[in-house]
Length: 301
Image (cartoon, rainbow, N blue to C red; front, side, top):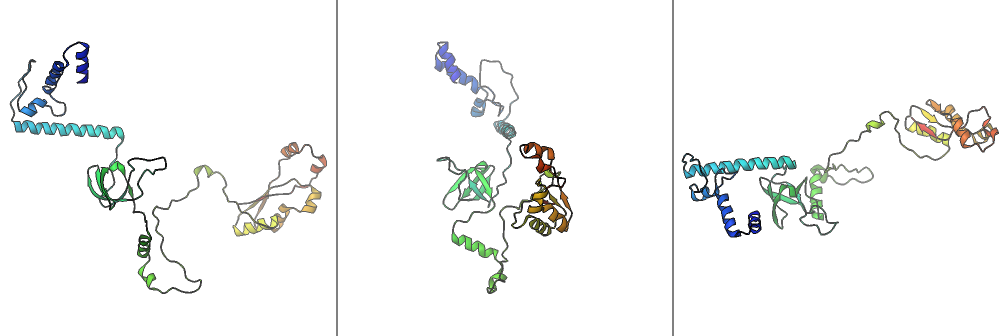
């Protein structure tokens, strides 16, 4: 209609006459959803226009009304299907009696939660419209405005005590409390969410994984003690690069592990090229010994 009024203003014609002409043509044109002109559905007769027409077989007003309703319903179903496919709509799993959280209509600031903390109980469901109440007010919104929860949260001490009594079996409540340290809690713990199983990532399948353990005392004795506690299959130790003299005064952890370990011990030598390049400012006589260098850290396999 606004295009018609603008065109009449540009052509300097009466916008009222042009608007009446546009409405007369619109009301005499069959609608895409019903298949009949609005004038014919309103006055139960075909409109008289200046355009040539092909006379259709006469049908009763009741049959025309039924055909228009069926055509309108069919077109609406097509439009709904296209809209759902375009927006990836999914059916709602909310049923009557479920507890839901209502999405906040208006956020006051950035700290306002997306959903109201107080749960609602679903009273009625009609298509995608859901009616729910929280005891104080009743709201009707689209299913996209609600989020299903397993059970309502507990807000006061009375509800906590009542739920705790429901969890404790009756035979445990009747038994008198036992004295001493032998009394143990046999109350089953219920989890709101399923327990997630932990698996080792696939990219670590080709590597050896382990855990860190800190112990006090002499290094060799601590490594042997940890290997016995962890039921290890092998001990892997490294080297520090100590010479014969230092090794005599400071002792060798690798020698201690080799002679006292109940499991095989693997001693890894240090790369001498990298060691000499890193310590090129040291004296050469510290690296001329034929003895194997000492170790620093032990890994338990």
